[in-house]
Image (cartoon, rainbow, N blue to C red; front, side, top):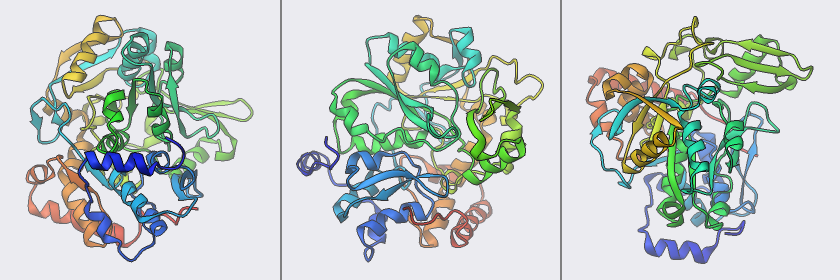
Length: 445
């Protein structure tokens, strides 16, 4: 597809796939197309995935770094309402709707589809130690590039221009995969050129955040090539990333002001391992994981959209991997030498086949089977987000915000696990934050 969205291709796709005009589109009848696009960012709902640039075309939308420190879509040409309708339909910031693609497992109220829950880690000891939390995603990517199942893996590596950011990477070799290993707690837009990659006609795998996988799944309803060519969709269980303001504060306290930063490794070389910060003079400073995040979830300073995320657990993926510290508490005494263990949810048959093949090839080692309730203990903040999701989104919409259209996430059932008083607290809190513009961003430009 060219930079400009092909009207003929779009029309053909719409003839095959029923139109899904989501509720949020009808909340903006008096705004221009550009104002409707900007509203997603202004309300703090953009995840920065980059898909809108690829689908609509860079002559109309381009992802740019903002003064806020985020990557956001900017209108670069005269947009039509039809184009913005498409953005609203595919945007994972305001639309997280599961289809039933390859879902062939029993669903847990909190964790969704899961054929199997287990502990696992990368098969190569050096990869396990270097990568994040046991290196399952790195090991799976190693297997995929060594196999004939895909031509490349689309994922994220450290940016070559913005040290704190991630940038999209196409990995063809084992060396490519290793280069991109390690978590990225900063803005990244892995789907900037998805349509151009689909134009190649080559099968590939995708590894990203749950919201990135949601973007892929949303777009798959309008472009059949996604299901044909994206052979595997793998996700990291995600709690969010530091706001740019908080990240700058961390660097300042670490003695490396943002303009002096040339490299940061957020974790790895242990589980989670040290934060490595390098300045322009080549000096390297080390800080702990808890220095970066603070002690406990209440100290996390994350974007507004991450706080109200209804799917930080990658329900639309074939397989997900998570940290596995009890109560999500890092043991500072062992984090520098712990080789790491991932808690893995194999969501469907595709994920199971991939896991079995990677184990047989020696790229993944499997440990004991675990349960969904053990996942609760590893990821208590995800339990809270799922139980509070319905009320938080309702609070945003009551305050006049777009909110998030959700389908298939069992938010009603999860909300019923808590009492009405808890739901009211969450609804009122989200409504107040929205009205106080605590998550608001300026108009992108």
